[in-house]
Amino acid sequence: MELLTIGDMAARSGVAQSALRYYEREGLIRATRTGGNQRRYERHELRRVAFIRIAQQVGVSLDEIREALAALPENRTPTKADWARLSARWRHTLDERITMLERLRDQLTGCIGCGCLSLQRCRLINPEDRLARLGEGPQLILNPPLRQ
Amino acid sequence: MELLTIGDMAARSGVAQSALRYYEREGLIRATRTGGNQRRYERHELRRVAFIRIAQQVGVSLDEIREALAALPENRTPTKADWARLSARWRHTLDERITMLERLRDQLTGCIGCGCLSLQRCRLINPEDRLARLGEGPQLILNPPLRQ
DNA sequence: CTGCTAGTTAAAGTTAACTTCAACTCAAGG
DNA sequence: CCTTGAGTTGAAGTTAACTTTAACTAGCAG
Image (cartoon, rainbow over all chains, first blue to last red; front, side):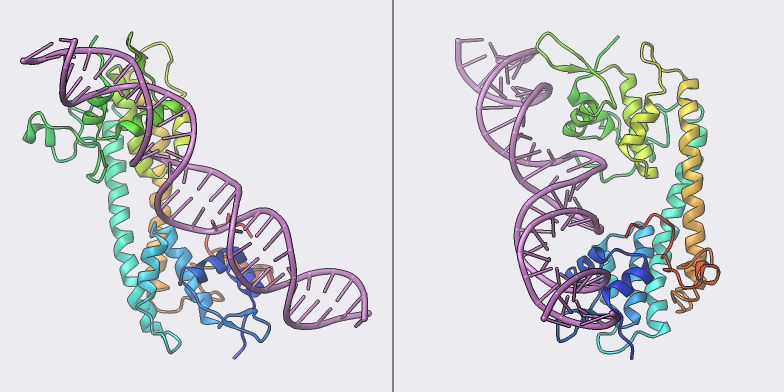
């Protein structure tokens, strides 16, 4: 059971040591300590780091990533099935994000592309035809959660 | 030539007044002033705001958005052609982002999905087969710009 | 004129995700 | 034993994109 130093982890994962310490403080990865208080990582922590970076690319926050990682077993090395279960979640998130961007792209092409980018008429800006249905109310740009 | 107050702009764009002031400080939108120093917006500034929010959804930073908006004419209301020219840029960015996410999704399915998420063997983690080609060097997770 | 809502400013606060810094300690080679 | 490179800590700094606050002014109805 060979353990990795923080330097090893940084080199093999491409993630800075300061980030690895940060992830540990945030409860995303774990390390044991040597007698001299240095961190030693088990090999499977590398997989956690990989998972973290991938999820970040998908646009998931560290908070959500921590939550997902909490589904891994505490007292044994995660199995393939454990990881597969987690990845299913991101797969779904990814699908959603891709769909959103594709819709945005298609509408962009036919909408800003044509120069019509009008808050009154554009489906991109006023997606559910809110203006038409709600009459005088405020016309929201894009999707809901834009706070006022 | 009816001008809009900041309240009008906020209501019609769904963007907070504080954000509109911030955009102005950052040089993304412009307003004239009344005798009493209140902002008055021309109608086409709404289109700018729409453009800003759309670009943000695509993942573009305000810095880049400002740069893009700088291509609009200073001294006349932008035409459809002006907007179409700008949108072409985002269209391209969008395409790239979608492609990236699709690649990520496909690899996620076949890679984390299968539980193999291994830094040594996984194409997702080690995309260009760096390990194989470069021998002992550090193995970077995902795409390049991960600083050390 | 009185009130009230809408608008103004500069400055400070917020959040995420880290990095940088200063001041040390550990581990290993010679 | 000495030196050097790797590791440790808490605290403060960084960046983007805003929001909040406090103290004040404008515009308009009655």
